[in-house]
Length: 187
Image 1 (cartoon, rainbow, N blue to C red):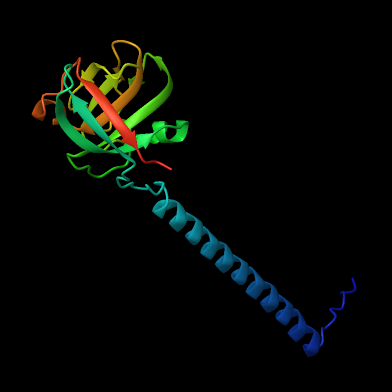
Image 2 (cartoon, one colour):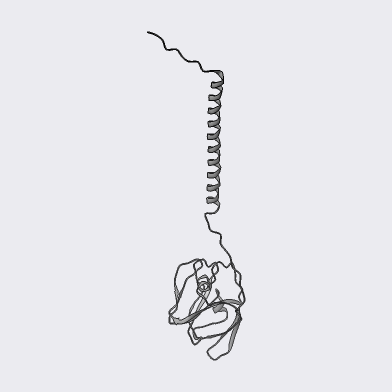
């Protein structure tokens, strides 16, 4: 039997073949490094941004509110922030780190109806007062639980809700039957 002759490749062809291999190997290494870097940045971004950034709000004076007894005698006046549109009413006093004793928020609704509030994303305990169209306080919830989905409903139809710092209604003896009057300076 005749043996097949092996062809010898020239040294130039061998070098060219080795260079192709080296070129392909360097491309593969580069691609692997790029993928590793991309994965690192994606994972790092996910780990550091898995919690959405919380925007905290500060009090913005937009009016003044007076609490009176049923005879019209002034009990106390406070500075007021007004929530008179859907966005402001939904946001309410969420994400507030603090509030002064002489500050509050007045929620104004278009119609008098049963109302219910909660404390989701609310960081400070509040006293909530539900007020009818005649400006008379009909329901008070005191020292509501922070960060809670518990419902705090009105006991009757309310057109307004006033929120103040927890303990306010006890300190100033604000009671069901008292009235509120306000003057807004909101533009």
